[in-house]
Amino acid sequence: QIAFLDGLASVLDAKGGRLGDLVWTETARRLTDGELYLVFSQLELLVELEVGMEFRRCQDQALVLQKGVLFGCLLLLQGRSLRRVHPEELSIEGLDHAVVQPGTLIPLRRRFVVYKGGEIQFWRCQRCSFENSSSDFGCKLCGSPPSCPQDLPQEGRRLGLAGVAAL
Image (tube, rainbow, N blue to C red; front, side):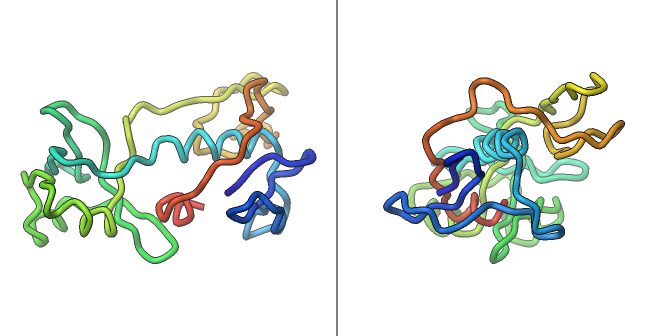
């Protein structure tokens, strides 16, 4: 789990005991409350495959449809990371236009996850008012970290395989 505990972005064990701080790999700096909020919002966009979802090859990405409507893009779980599936990979795997069936659900869930939506979310820098993408953990104009909104979840967020890979 990850949670905001005692004013710190923390990693918790399955029983809620604190294991350590959530830090950036490159700098070993702790995540701010605003950065943790962005992490939470990004993790909520990762959705497991469901029966009936369909894969479609598009120009530069592999898309997922649900009931004929665009649902998101397909991501591949690679060990401890995620990456977008290239449309050519769908053809190679024989998945272009494939529909997730009950018998294929579990094996596909072990390999893939869906990044839901496609709409880019933004946060406004409190220092300079610049609108930044939710994937930017620092303001593109002035470098300030995102501020924490009032609705930072107090409970921890359990992480599945895709969530761990995303971090």
